[in-house]
Each structure stands twice: as structure tokens, then as C-alpha cells.
Amino acid sequence: MENPRARHQQITALLSSLPAGEPGSGLLTLLRPLRAQVASLVSDDGFSYLLERTLFLTAQSFQWIKAESASSTEAGLDNLRAKLATRTHEEALAASVCLLASFIDLVASLIGDSLTVGILRAAWGDDALGAWGEDFKHEQ
Image (cartoon, rainbow, N blue to C red; front, side, top):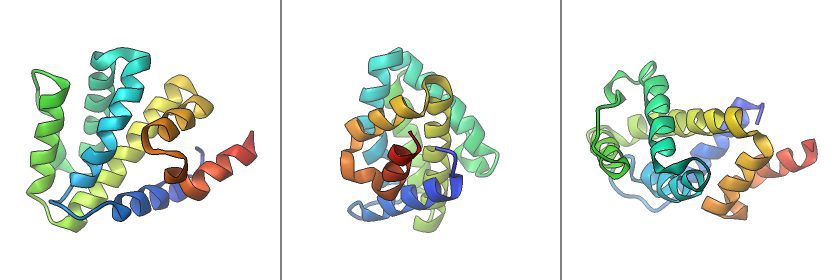
């Protein structure tokens, strides 16, 4: 997971391949199954803390995405969806790529690359990682 440019390109391609909807809907489409996989390791509260940290990091580049207190993980995801929906498709896509890359980096820093790739495959399917996943397999 050491090639951030390749990761950003793959995340952009993955988000762009999802059915069109309101700006940012693709991010939520990817975060929901990822939430289930990550929460199985660190609990739903753990996922929420990781998401809050990621939102904080993403807000350094996209101030409008700043995290707000939420009563639950689902409420936090709804808040994120609402913020993304107010932006243009391009703004929402750029913020979504940044957020997802930061989230993946944070998870990988905690549990390692191999387990993170396994979580991503379980959440999104084997084909979702494309060449990025293949590159990782060759690094091992």
C-alpha cells in the first residue's frame, strides 16, 4: 500500500464505476460493506473512531467535510452523505477519494497491509482492487 498515486487512481476508478447518484453516493456504497468488515475486528465504535479521525484528516484539504458529533455510526454516515450531496460531483469525488485513501491508510497502519487488503476484498470483492491488489500480491 505504499504507492499513494496508484491507490488514488484505483479508488477514483472504483468510485467512478459505481452507478451514478447524488454526489458522494459512491463513497457510502463502499463505506457500508467496509464498515461491516472493519467493525468485525475493532467493533462498530472502533469503526466510528477511525472514520472520525479520517474525516479530521480529510478536512485539512476539504474544510467543508469536517466531522460533526453523531449519536451513532449510521448517523455519522448520514451526515457525511448529506455534506457530499451539497457539492458538485467533482468536489464530492475528490473528497471521497481522499477520505477513502486516508481511511485505508489508517486501517493499514493499525493492522498491516495484508489484512487490510483481505478486508477490502471481503468488503468489495476480488475485482475491486484491480491492479492495485495484484501489485500487493507480488510484493509479498
